[in-house]
Length: 196
Image (cartoon, rainbow, N blue to C red):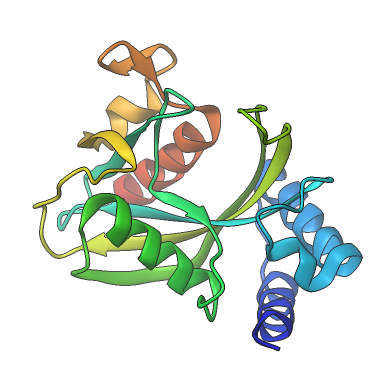
């Protein structure tokens, strides 16, 4: 029953929102299509064809100048905290907050935008898990503190200036890069910061 509520709420949110940027707008339509096709099944982590929903937390520092990224153990990339939707998650915003706490210990945050961005990206095969797509719903948060600690699930953690992330077509730290969608979000945040 709870998954039915997730379907209805996310469908309502996605239908009420649009982006002027071509990429997130195309991804919004893909998320809506997945909801329509698979319904509650699309929130299950073993729904591999075409994929399933995930939730991410793009978290700014108190000044709004730096972005919190984790060094992802399996993907070997600097990415925003996030992950799969669990059975107890009542919405994807809360799933993103839970993932943020699990991966960084950070709980003292303010929600700026509960549906800041969406992205569909490929996840490579790993062990018994086949390649599939993550249909990611991204929440924008502002941390009230900067004290964080990498938890068991991640290899590292750090605050990165928005400019550093935007310019990171190669390595950020430790020889590892970030991905295009993180750079895209950082560019939007940097543009918003410079125009305010």
